[in-house]
Length: 507
Image (cartoon, rainbow, N blue to C red; front, side):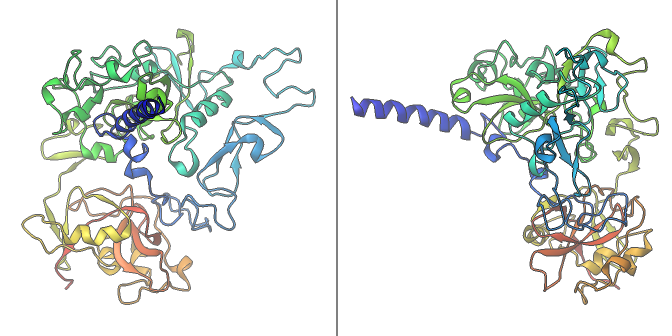
């Protein structure tokens, strides 16, 4: 009998383990639901400097995800009562300069014992009656009347997103637009936000919904036994490992390019562009493995995929929602397609030979760019490489444009690629003199926020670029350049930056 019980327990756990680790069953659970974009604690703005070139910020470590000396917090969030005992509910987020907590969404205790703005003195909560449809921080869907938190407010500890329990608690305690009845959305509600992936939009082929929550019969059908095939994978169904014949995607689906993703454009309503793209739902995965893991469904808007993650091991982001009515839709057009100054949203909006970069139609660069100083640069799209130790091998192993002698540029070479920001060259750091200068804060200043990369090279400026140069006295820091500000700055060697390879020698 004991042997029989052991075998039963062993088989159950074996099944759960297999379900959790299968790449086909849960593409993102393998890494805890964190894409490489989110693993780096570096904020990409120049070792804690703001993107807009704010030269008054003195804390160079702010944004690394670690609460260093002199910081109150760094990128995380906590319950308001922990930030200050006078608050009774809500979540406080870390301020951009790491100097303290933003308590704008916290609730306080009034002198009469009720919560300010919430209690009429008779125990009746009137806050929801004060909903402001024109408030900042929300978007009202004119089709469904769902009211969404916009932009996202809770990035989770280190900015990687909260667990499901933390996400649900955040929405329950959220006070926004004069109301506190926010909640975690269902998977059906998340599907109303999908654009450009017909299979996971509302009414699409994928059956995963509030009424169909078992992963084995409502989300996975790789042999097409139930007739919906790989439709729940969204655009990921087009990967070579899957049978594209049962993706059920149309010709108008999955048309975003890599450059669109770099711009923060995903398969979601344009009003929610640039925010993190994997959102938790309140809908449980009721399959055997899903129940064992306490898994919940989430939607990945980068591919339109509907997947599930364990509450204890997965981190995704959260957009709280509340139910509205037609009267809650603002008088102006609620869904703003794009800023009037934008020339494009997707590449198809541009002429032949151009692509959409930062909402501008720009000429697609050639394969390489030969600068006046003789250096030949890899042009066009380049990869982000996590960890400085992986950047040099990436270039050394690159076979591109008929050449295999590419390498990671040193700080002198990469500085020569900066155009229009004289302050970059004023910084005395070079490959020959890589030591941290004593007057760094005054001589290595940044220019105003802009674009200091030659158009012939490409326009990827959202994140800094690695160099091969480090200060021998700083074992965990290396030199990098931010082409958005022209900043030469120290970066942690664990960061996630672009690697644009070079060949040849300077004149």
